[in-house]
Length: 112
Image (tube, rainbow, N blue to C red; front, top):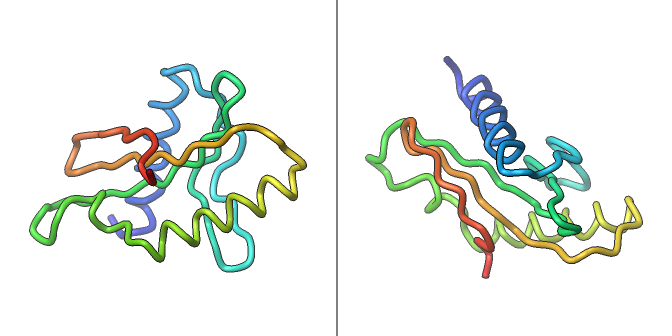
């Protein structure tokens, strides 16, 4: 399985996880001006921007460790563009869902 297939599988599993927790998936793979957000979801009036990361092996660190300050800023800029484009005025949160091997971890408010 190549990286693209692994990424698609991980995003699908993340969507199932979110749906089971009561989230409504608004959009997947939103791309705009060089940025991308894997999943945009909503729960209780809150818009949640979700970055999905997967690692088969932890040899070079955990999946969550691959999100650096530059990536966070790019996600935040893309989220702002999404909100403007969609004309949404809701509170927002940035979450990360990681897969280290088969273990899923949902980190809420990951960028704070």
